[in-house]
Image (cartoon, rainbow, N blue to C red):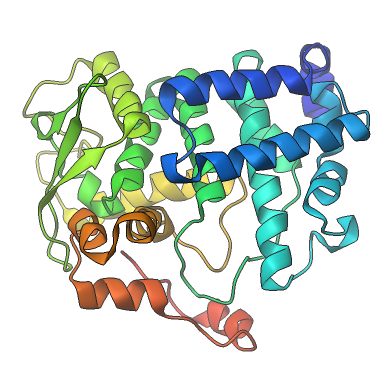
Length: 333
């Protein structure tokens, strides 16, 4: 954190936390960073963070960054000294939610003044929390998705060609594709109309995911449009994966896409023991089920109802989770 503050301190201290909240709200209004059905709930967290920042006289953005653990504890009600510990479910949910939403707001508010390396240092400076649940692999929560979306926007805007590609891979997984599936998507499989309906023809794969049409929300469509426009992709070109030779190998392609997603999860501190790269895709299935039902969810994920139920409901004993996490291979989606 010292290098970040010494390099960009005057810039960060020149902006207030209120400026960051205002910029977040502006971008959220145009790109729809917050999932639509949880927008009000996430906005309440932002308001609570802003109010507590005022109470603590953390006015400048740099002050909020340096005192992030203090602000998270005050706003969430979780004791500051407990943030780094294993917490009971309700406390863990509050601590994680406030941490993730605060980091998302700060990243969006500061993104025009930071390099990618500075942004990575900023994210690293935030508290690193223990896993959130006793599940071995669970879907990302809405606040985790908000943070991942904020990071993807940052990559798309300041990460160059590699950043735009990484953001586009994430956007497809966020829409319901598994990471390996994204490697088979062609430019012609995507139809983007930000004023109407945007769709993606998902190819499916042999691991139990069927081909289907998924709807892209405004966030997904915007990041894919930015990536496509920058590269001037033609119809038969692959959207985000280009093998080094003419031979397409699914295992190698899948590993590449998983790496792209996992690096983003790690950058913002979401690489917990109860999540994997699949948690991004599982979030879309879980989110769809919560608001539109199981049938709509399986239509998005390409899974059977039985497979969907197994993935979404399986839990491990809270007592055994830590040891089993160390020796059991993660579930892939």
